[in-house]
Image (tube, rainbow, N blue to C red; front, side, top):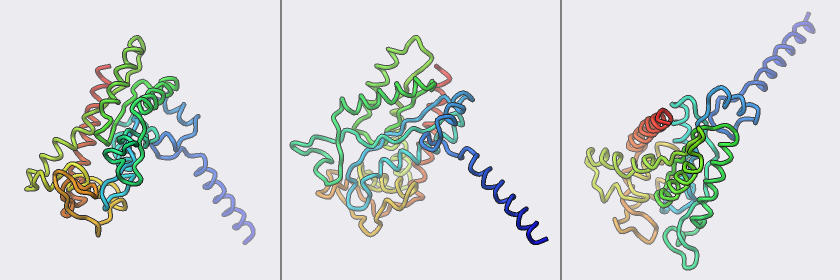
Length: 269
């Protein structure tokens, strides 16, 4: 009798394991899917692909160099899940960050990685061409960093002119980034925080947004004030009162606005 029960239990576990292995993962990340799973999802109507663009750069002594990459990925996942018909491409982490000789902008700090604008634009272009080939109809660029927003638009405009007689469109969602400089700042100011404290880089707004999405990227014991003109350590603002609660305001604004803009762009097309 024991052998029989052991045999039945073994069969049960084997069936459960087989079902688990056969199940498509609950993921909106293109990287998590097999090519056949992706093919089937596109055929079923998931024809929007979000291309998250980050950047590897200094963010003061308190935030990890990959801040933009992590934020772009996490925000894109939230946006895709709300849309329901979208998937998320791998993050583009190599972006224009200044010159090497002489080092300028963030390139003055160890760990920042830069590429020329034309290289970046070519990367975006051929990512979009790849997605068009595979059946995506709406290709959406969302960039977490301000320095390359114009490049996104250049590529989108060029491809849309070329593809005007096709059903495929590229959307450079500049609003995704602009919200962090406008609506999010206004929301923080309405709660009594000054523009100097909110800052423009590694200040209260930037740090809070990161805390809301991935607190492991922030070294709380290293938070220190800079000035509106910046400091030798790359801080523009004062992050000392940063919190995940304040950051969630920015997350909600970015996701809601981007979901709306993508839905409208797809409808208009």
